[in-house]
Length: 164
Image (cartoon, rainbow, N blue to C red):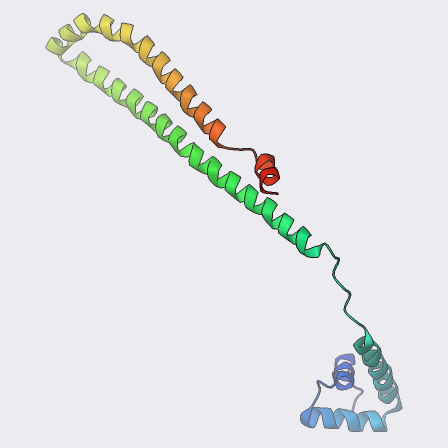
């Protein structure tokens, strides 16, 4: 029989090699001086490793883990609030883009019809005069919405400090 591998010797030393394989390996170690010496070495190593004690965790281990979890939760809440704050801004942007696209299509339809074109020529200056106030109003509305959102979202460091 050839010599035992290190894995077989280690399994035999720590008692995990059992059954017919374990019995054959033990008989081989009794007959082979090299494998017997290796088994003795591994057995001594297993005995010394078994005598080791687990280290005690630091006294502030639980507090440190809980603080780290709190910071992680604060980051998740911030991210969630940021995403929720982006929804109205996205809706406003889509509304503006769709309005612009429809305005372009309406202008093309009006240019194609002569009666409507005559009406458009008469009403056009009125709409042109109203567009500037509408643009200013839309800008002010967006500024108010973004200001309100920025005041409702606290920075992450403020939430962590407030929660402590």
